[in-house]
Length: 159
Length: 135
Image 1 (cartoon, chains in turn green, orange):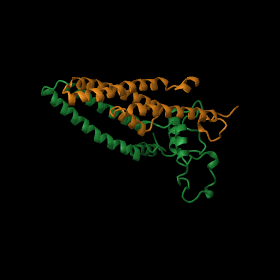
Image 2: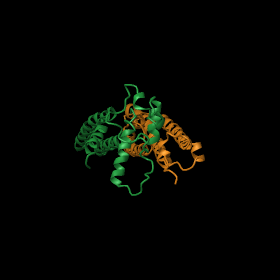
Image 3: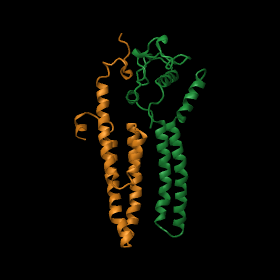
Image 4: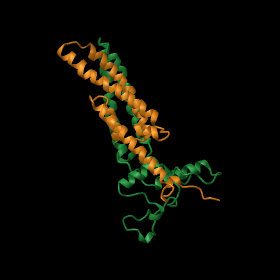
């Protein structure tokens, strides 16, 4: 916590509002009421003498639980570094490697670096790289990994 | 799956096997339901098969879904593949097609991953292989 908190907070919140995540939120918000309604419907049939409906009365809540589980899993799934690079390469804009970092003046107007400056040196080790300093504060190390993750660009996955 | 035996230690092997086994069970159960249970119910007015088989299929489908979600989590699946797998549990005959594609694609991805890891150190941009300076 400290000076880095607002930026970290913004980054954490933003990840829930990518088009990909919003699509998942909407899907879940449609599915859950449907599953609840189906549960209620089967429960009503079961209490009116349809014994088989008891099986479905307990099954629909399980489907709802599954939907929540998959929603949570897909939102919090991070592509591996290799996946990230391959996806970016396929999309035609590889994440900047050290050799891509030409001087400021050479950048086209459109892709000028963030005026706030890079959050970290461009050739900073990726999130999976081993940490050199052994006596590094674990919280700081985690934060640095998080910054490197942000610096690597947005999640290149479309869906 | 032939090449999987030659390359060492696929960490996804168990999860993939569980998913494949459940695919064949659920896919077969669905085909029996559609080809035997439903015709009997509609034309012979004998609905016992459809009811029992349908219920069994429903719960097997849940088990199948969880094996698929486990595999998806381990292999970082995209949503599209997850949707195809969820759909294939209740669209007759789709399960076998999707399973075949999933296995082929995952083998491809694994080969690609191994290739990427192999030529990693030679590539200066590979951030995963960044090693601490010698000395």
